Image (cartoon, rainbow over all chains, first blue to last red; front, side, top):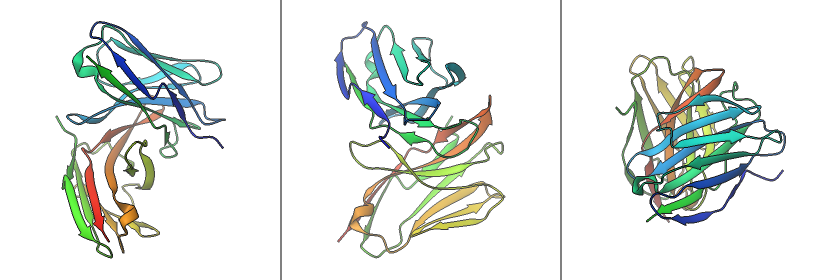
Length: 114
Length: 114
């Protein structure tokens, strides 16, 4: 089975712009969750989607949003980019978010905000 | 407030040594404790996980020890190899909204010298 894919892998944006990142889960997986990884804050949960519905959201401002499509692919959007949004954005997929384990991470999208 | 504290931040051992990474949590509602391994340029991969009703779990060379009363858990890597050189993250997950939400430790960079 192909793993979780994320596009693009690298992105450079200017402060104030917006950005959309994409995640394609493992075939058959219906849940996608997003995480932000930075040297200062570590790995932090952003939000999780299951069957096109947001199940949970982490402690991030409203500039961070996401959605999931009927084919389980997910996108996350960050509006009005700030320098502090520079990070590695990871998505993970799983069969069912109600299962504790079985989350498979993609390689991430490295976002740099200048 | 950091809910999962991980130590040490970095660790260097010789091949064959037994590196130990420790994590402590505060919220007793956490009920699933996974460890992830991350190589440079890759997303984290689930290594091993434990539930709070179990005191120890082994999978190959990796062992989790769990002390519920102390709210601490640790990862032991037996007969460590240079290929184990990676960053290791502990996490504590809480069930909310029908899914498990992880809180991650800050990570431990492990180097195993040949």
